[in-house]
Structure formats: structure tokens, C-alpha cells
Length: 590
Image (cartoon, rainbow, N blue to C red; front, side, top):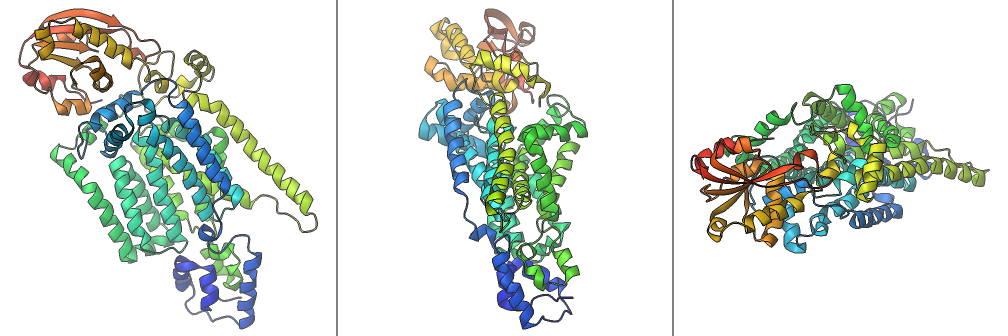
């Protein structure tokens, strides 16, 4: 039985810091090997299927950069086909009221919206510029993780390709949303953890903490990922990381970055938690555990789902670098087997734990989407390792066979991605998109319980906003000058209100007010309620607050979702109480 290598040069070549710490735990009482054994072990490096430090020795494939550039151009070309999405108008409104917190989102997205408008203007291109860059970032991260896991050019290319064509990322990166940036923060942390597990400096925990902290400011679900990492480390031999100070200092950095937002939540009575209580089981579609799990395949493309499964397997049972690179030649068989089990298992456990969290809390199906680039990267590495090797005596035949297998893997993914792309992005003319979405029965899968029209919610929420604002402007312009000077525009929901705030200045409209979510926190401003133009409310609702309710017009923007169609616009006068006193009755969460 061979013993563990003690020679420093051989050990450094094969293990790195993390593997050396594992070795120290496994090798107590084992005698050093002979010089011949060491020479034999060192010579295996030239025959090893993977470099001893693949994250550094293997270059990032050119194809990864090419796919990232393609994604950028692809989104720039098609992201402006329809109109502004409801939520990105809302984020733009929040960007005009910068704060450390908001009712229904963490603060970073508002800052990004403000930056976009300041630097680039108010166009669709401006709002969607940074999400487009995020699309490229996801692809590069996927290729980088594949490289860090030991993958060569094909694994890196396959990981990048699957992320490029994943429908959920095509959707996320099509409009301004924290969902576009969330995978970058999750997967940047995953990539840092991979490097640490591969023997990287323990000080990388400081970078991990910084990225995680900013990720929390982007979206609070980063906390679920952090919880998964914490438990995942504890469930594996990597729990040794808790013995060093850097992981705790990294956690401290993350907490300090998150602290201003946490203070905002405390001071305002944790409105984000109140919102979640209001929407889970009502606005959010409730799924059984099995429905939640199988619908995950729709996020990454059903054809890519097996790659995710293989990736999870790889993360759970992947060999350490030492074993993968032939260092097992100088490790005792039994300890080597243990060493080869689950070097990246903390990441696998992270995925499983977050999956359980989302099922238990009835989260939307896409809440787990930020985790899939690491599974796709790991699955791509597993596939590359199991491709037929090139035989020395029949290199041409082996090369042809390998290329054939690769083509058989890539072609269906490309075809599936091209089929799915028009369902995730506004690529087709809207009349063709209606037919295409109906053919694939897209409405059968929905994250929210809202009535749908001709288009799925993703596309339907891009229609009607300018139409609404123009209609309100006509009613406003018809008022006497004295009424216009004191007129408030009251919208039922944040979509209608933020549309007025975004497009209204060009129509000389005042800022809108609404009781919905963050707008409710901003209050009724200085309006008295003596003259109010409303949109979205029914006349019967308004008569509870005003003595005079006059219909002005009714609109039905084409292709808008049903709740934004057949809308009445009313002019209200003679408030029964001052608007500030009635405001709590107008406020609602949803």
C-alpha cells in the first residue's frame, strides 16, 4: 500500500493549500514513500488529464468571449422591440427617490436605474444597457467556472453556450431588473469558493464577503444562497474553513455592507417581510414540490436539464485536483478514495439547500435560477471528461469520433435555444409572437396569479403605458388652469404611477401618487385632493372618498394585460376628508 506524499515539491505541484490541509488530516502515522515512488508520482503529471492548477494554467477559451460578445449584440438588437416593462419603469421611479431600502426590493436596482438614466438618458437602450452587459458576464462566469473545475476548451464552450441559450437568462437580461444581476453575485461567490477549495488564498473570503454583501443590496434572496453555503461547508470536510479568521472577516464585511438596508427595514417595520406575507399564496402561484422541481427544467432549457443533473453529481462526487492529476499515485488507496469524494460538495449542498428553502417558502420557480450556471459548468466538465479519448494509434479516427459526439451534443442545444428565444425575448413582431406563444402554450406556466390576455405576462406588461399617459394628458389639458395647478394624478398600482412619472414630464404632467407598495410610503405629497385624476380605480371605489366622481374616458391599450385594459379615467372632486387623512385607506401591498 502506497503512502501519502511528503515531498514538498511534489505536494505543492499536486495539491495546493486546501488539498494539503486535507492531506494533513488523512496522513497521520503514514510513512513517507521512497524516492522512486516520488519520481513516479511526479512523472505522472505529464500524463495527467488535467493540469494541477486548471483555473490558472488552462486559458479561458476564445469561444467563451465570442459567445459573450454575441449575447451582447443579440440583446442590443432585440431588447427594444416592444416597450418598457412595468417593473423597470417602477425601478426608474425608485431611482428618483434614492434610499437604503424599498418596500419590495433592495436598493441597488434603483441606484442602477438612476445611473443608467444619468449617463445614457431615458431610452429603452439606456435602461437595458447594464442588463445586456450582465448577459455577457454570466457567460464569461460560466466558462470561468468550467475552467476552474478543470474543464478544457470544449467544457468551457459548452458551459457558456448553455447559459447563453437558457430561456430564463434570455428573459432576465431583456429588461432592467435585479434578476438580471442576481446570477452574477451568486455565481461570483460560487467561483470564489471554487478557487478557495482548489487551494486558493484564504484571504479570498474577504472578496467573497464583499460580493455577497453587494449581492444582498441587489436582492435579499442572496441571503438564501449564503445560508446554503454556510450549511454546505458544515456538511463537508470543508468545515475546516471555519477555523480560520478570514471567513469570519468576510462575513463581517458582508454584514456591514448589508447593515444600512437592514437598519432601513427595522426603522420601517420590516415592510419587505409584510409584502411577502401579502403575496405568497395569493399573487404568487403556489406549486407542489414536484411541480416546482420539474419546472426548473424550463428555466435552463429541457435539453440542458440533464447537464444540470450531471453537474450536481459532479459537484457532489468530483475528485480533488490531486487525484485528478495523478497525485493519487503517491496516496494510500483508501485515503485517496476519501480525498477524491466531494471536493466541491459544499456547492452541491448549497444548491440542494436553496432548493428546499424555495419549496418550503413557496417561492417563484425562477428564484433558483441564479444557481444554474455553476451546475451547467460542472455538467459540461463531466461530459468533457467522459468523451471518448483519442487513441494514439488511431488519432484521426478518434478525433473524428470526438467531434461527432460534440456536434451531437451542441446541435440540439442550439436548435432548442433558437426555438425558445422568441418565447423569452421580444424577437418576433407582436402579431406573430401571439401565435407563437399560443402554439407553445406559454400561458400554462406562470409565476403569478394574474389574468392573461393575448400575450404572456412578460410581453403583455410591455404594452399600454404610453397609451395610458397620453390619455391622462388629454384629460389633464382639458382642465381649467386653476384646476391643473392643484391636480393630483392618483394611480391604482405602481405600473400606472411610474408610467406617468417616466413619460409624464414630456406631456407636462405632475408626478403621480399611488398607494401601491413603495408609492404608498412616499405619500400624497402636498396634494389636498380637491382635484384628482384617477386611473385604475372603479367609480364605486372612488365614491367612498370623493363627493363628485366624473368619468372622463375609458381606454383599452392593444396587447396590454387584462388588468391594464378597459381602464376608466375619472376626475374626482369634493374629497370627504383631506387626502393625507384618507391616505392609509389607499395604501396596499401586492
